[in-house]
Image 1 (cartoon, rainbow, N blue to C red):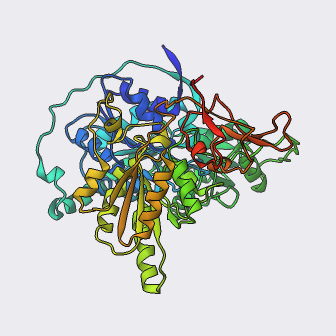
Image 2: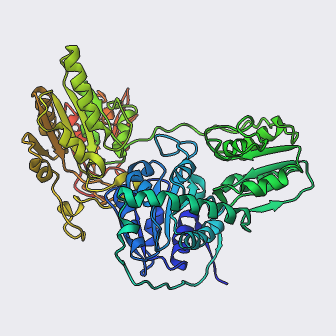
Amino acid sequence: MNKAILTGNEAISRGFWEAGGLIASSYPGSPTVSILESMKTYDEIYAEWATNEKVAMEVAMGGSIAGARSLVSMKHVGINIASDPFMTFTQIRTKGGFLLVVGDDPGLTSSQNEQDSRFWGKFANIPILDPSSPQEVKDYIKDGIKISEEFNTPVLIRLTSRLCHSRAVVELEEREEVSSEGFIPDQSRYCMLPPYANAAQYFMKERMEKLKAFNNNNSKNTLEINNSKALVITSSLCYANLKEINAPVDILKLAMVWPLPIEYIESISDKYEKILILEETLGFIEEELKINNIAVEGKKYFPFTGELSIDAIKVGLKEAGIIDFTAKNIDAEKVPLRTPMLCSGCPHRPIFHILKMAKATVMGDIGCYSLGILEPFEVHKTNISMGASLGMVLGVAKAHKKLGIKKPMVATIGDGTFFHSGMTGFLQLVGCKENITVIVMDNRTTAMTGGQITPTTSEYFKHIDSNAVSIAGVLKSFGIEDITVVDQFKYKETKETILNAMKREGLSVVITTRPCAINFKVKEPHFYVDENICISCRNCIRTNCPPISMQQYEGKEKKNSYIDPDMCVGCSVCSQVCPVGAIKRSTTTD
């Protein structure tokens, strides 16, 4: 049998391919980005990025009702966007196997919240599989497809950030080809008007009863006997971390964590003096077992937030009286903290510099430009969810008007977020009389998650095969008239444009057009500092560009600016903010 080292995300793609999957859709969001990226390597699968998670969900739904085995993947907050079609689709008797793969983020590695997607599965009345290794990820994808088609249900596969990115040896198998007659119209099955939806409620109830019976006899739920009076019930990577400890406990590892195998757990619970639940974030399993009068403890000993590391599990087991554990004091060298920063040549940097100098009040949004919250810019004052900057800036402006506060307001939004969830916010802004300036930072890519294309990508890069959409054209069709398109690397012109827009009453929009320097490998002749002209004013330093630092030159009493030629991409912003012309362009890109 062939084997390969795969990440959890790659194992998702491989398992779906082996299961005969045909339709895969997603919206990029860490930790699940590389699922669709690796899915694209399989020619048999249609795999494409969607405008947002709702559209991705609907594409996979369409594949499923046509009889194709279909998968949609997203990070945990993506379910919030996709929940409208999702919560109705779960009522339908699915046709082709349908998997919702979700990447939760315990510890908030790359997210604005830490919601537990298992509760969505319970809310939606669908089964949840919770793998603990890349091998199980691949296996559970294939199991999930079978469960989906046997019980006519969507299946939620829940991963976490560490499992998405961890690597392990995975056994590879051949692809199973599955045929279908395509979409067969059936209004009672696919049209969720009240008469049909009411009947679907009873179908869901019957389906869940069958799934409960299935899980009570599910061979993938394994009981490991260690002749202990203590039982730990767990799943996911918590199981792998628990095994590292070699604790003197029996272990029940659950494969399907919803619906829980209540009858099976009841049948073995009397054998134990103590039953602990080991699960990351919220007490999902713990609460359900307590509801069913099974005496368990969990969050009393284990944290409700963050990842459950080996040390955290040891501490919890010690507090529960299971093991004797003394933490070792290791005087390890501390890793210096490094503040995240925008890349060399990032087109967002001059915008933040201008807004900071203007002391603007800015509602921020989700993307690379979220780094505008941090030092040295600190211009974004809010960061909630994708597209929220637009509604929030309007809400603040309306509140200020009622309170008699006269103050210009600014919002920022990227091109990916504009198409994801920003257009409806712009429609709400049309015709507002308050002083609001929105800066659309169009860098022609979803840069934060690795450079996936957006609808504006091919407007600038003609060789890219996708439809070109003009953000200015879209906004004009909304009835917005005050729109200015700028090249933000023309710093003085851009500064004048933004400051003038902030002085005008009503809605003004500034669209910046420079592309992401990293994803499109933008490289112009680099700049250098003439130390004999530099006055050490540090204006260039304040642009926070990584190549720029202060350096002691030979023969100089104090430090002057220095630009690392290997890092500089030649954006020119530093030279434009230099008051004495000390920063000059070289004649080569070397």
